[in-house]
Length: 426
Figure 1 (cartoon, rainbow, N blue to C red):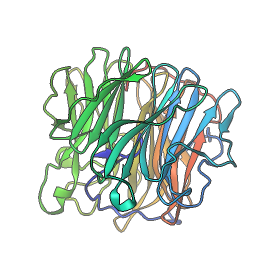
Figure 2 (figure 1 turned 180 degrees about the vertical axis):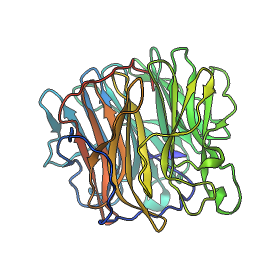
Figure 3 (figure 1 turned 135 degrees about the horizontal axis):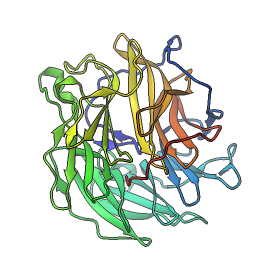
């Protein structure tokens, strides 16, 4: 499993769910006052602007957005903008071309943004090139740059493979007490490397598991908790093409045996993981309700909480609507420790996900709060991601059909009264 966005990752198997726009859909959900600012186009280029990633740097309270774009050349580049909280504006400004952060003749994809723990922002992405494209040799590189406050560092290769891989590397940053640990994932293998005081350590050899790592959080005792994708519990017919959600933990020496969290009651399309103020682990997974799966019975976001050494049963997170279609979600932790959830939702019509809009929800100590409608789409809203600061958050997503896609964003219009949790390292 390789994530496209933030963090999104692209699954190496067919999801077998057809996504179409549906202009006539009518999803009824309870809504309060609109707390969000205007929806704006962040990419503003002809062509395909896809797979956005967003990062928040708590020292400067700055937001960073990067995405994949083919609007500047023959192959995709990594473009981006930075939000300057001092001036209250984007750099480069809206109306100007976004900054080309890769600027290469090869294929650049899979951006990930992560604060470096020292006031900077790391950008990592995958670059692929082949002899048939005119390159001197086949190769796949994990690239990186650092924003240090005054500018971006020169790009550099963090890891190299002597082959043109069929997809991007998954990148999972985990904040450690005095460094940043990076998990580099491809299918069911991973490598690690640490970043400390502005320098990378040595990349470890490949380690292989029975599952593909997708999310990792670290608790106060130093244990790593992971959400992963693995073999579906049913291998009959089309079921073998689908995945289940798994949990496993690392104690510093070995991984625990992967526990199937979705079981026979569904198949996993997305997963999320976060720790709350009390140290309880929240495991979220979504099911697309595919007509091709015998176990996929309901399109929903499900949650299980690890309480007193026992996992709770699956509980639906969002308010259910008849024939709802939930396709993508992203779970994040704010700089103040609250759990933040964003997803796209529409209707299932003849087995197809249609009319996908963007929604947001926050979890405090007691429970998930009321849902908020972030964006009503006239086309199709895909791959929403978010980053949350001390008083506001930014949601970005991919908007549009196959002929032309853009990256949209929306931020809170007003500060909120919030119930805080201590920050847990992700």
